[in-house]
Image (cartoon, rainbow, N blue to C red; front, top):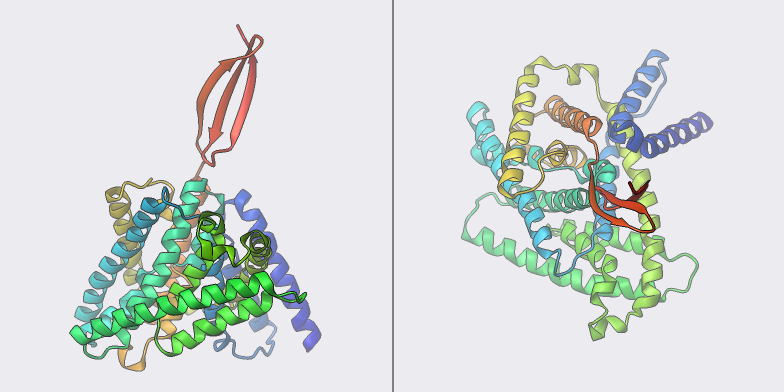
Length: 419
């Protein structure tokens, strides 16, 4: 039995890799293909009456590890300096404001149409309001560099804000002044933990001489996240700050304390660490969506009792996105299409305390919203075209050299004879 399972896993993950490297050409987000592949495998195993153990308990585990690695991967890619600080602040507002508005509006609708109280309605609404960085960041790889950077900032902040808001609502039975005071104390504690842990991990990264050094660092990061989560601390803040610190060493060289970490040596180690993080993140992400696709049942996808709710929620998501992109003066196309729900939505839904469960929000509604937002994103990516603009013309030895730049900022020079 072990041999067929190993063969199947190898083939599925190799297909996931093919989907990943061809998505830039096909414009189909790899996550959609992974979900379809997982679903097809389920149909095949059912047809052949293959005995497969229940994979439901595996999903939260893969999701948690995947979330950590994906936020870490995204934060390592971000370059933060004084010039980019306003852009980062606007991106964080784009993550926060629509999330809050969607949560409260949808929470009120759940409260009005279901048997739960308002707090239960709000707790159930938050998973639908959070953008999934696990889907958004890989999809944004085909976009122009500035749009790609925006999606990385926005989706990473959305995950963090969503988890913090969800924990605040579900862990406080009575929300009052004391709850807010305790909440700000938790933020302060995690900032202190982040500062100490980041310094310690950076020191280890630059000083471990053993040939195995990156896996222990990743394990310590996961350990700190899990321990912080046990004490209800917003642990994703630590992941984001750790990644931003390592990814922006050049910006921090002016500080005396940074020289003690040997930044020139550390920079080379960070490059290797980043590559390993990306590869492990790909593996966990692929497994998560394959398992999720495998667990999808046809009756859940086509559940007529929830499809109207799903369509209304998705319409509201993209309407809010259009409004706030316009208000904050971001480019509408193609950013409006990239608002997928996915890994973080599933994790928050599975984390709902029993007392907050309402019949209106179930697996069918979650699956339908995830699939619909993914389809909208796929359509947007298929129709997306990078713009090219001419920026300069100069002559040199009877030749006109027209310098053009695509939307990534890559220079293209075309020479034509001077007339």
